[in-house]
Image 1 (cartoon, one colour):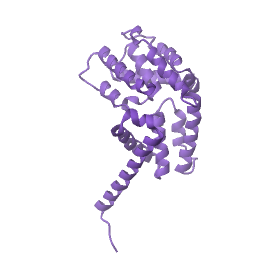
Image 2: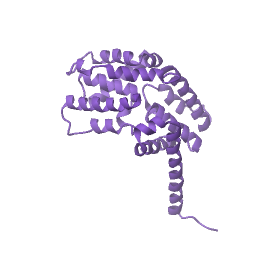
Image 3: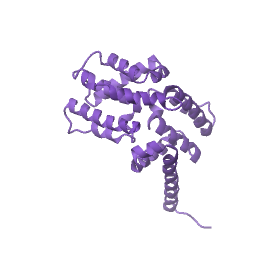
Image 4: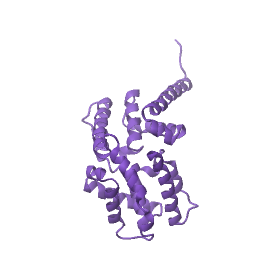
Length: 251
């Protein structure tokens, strides 16, 4: 009987994974063309690899289940399973009463589609308006120094930017998002009212974990750049690059 050494087995696994990865690149190119156009293939591949790794955490092993998980990563953000804005996602993924990963991903996918219809709009109309509104906000009008009212100011701005999503999230989740946003922004030495409003707005639009999301490498690059020692300069860079990125979605 022919025996396959461990090294050969590992190599066959790599070939199979590469084939699946290639098929997912084509899948995104076909069904999510705007994402492919904006991100480009190298980033698309990074996100797919990240999503495959995350999907293993929840025992999604069939190509169909992993494909559905990858779809949700692009729709909601690569860290949607830990997003404070989507507490129901984590509940479904960890619900031990749901028998089988196929049922779990189906239930999650159904919930996501309902959420997107209500928050984003059937034709993405609410999202389009939100992107236009955030570009109209003058961040120069906000205080450049720390403010005890930064959280309240951020809530007002999020309601103006994307009211449908705010209603869908609900007040408690919205407040938790602001609290977490202020805490995470502080870890990057961003404490000014202007910086907090921008940071929480990006969490709101791109996903709570946008700072570690392979879909937005420009954000991580700026936030972790130790050569930018001045907060105002960091916020300026973050604002400029985020507006450049969001503009692509409107063209």
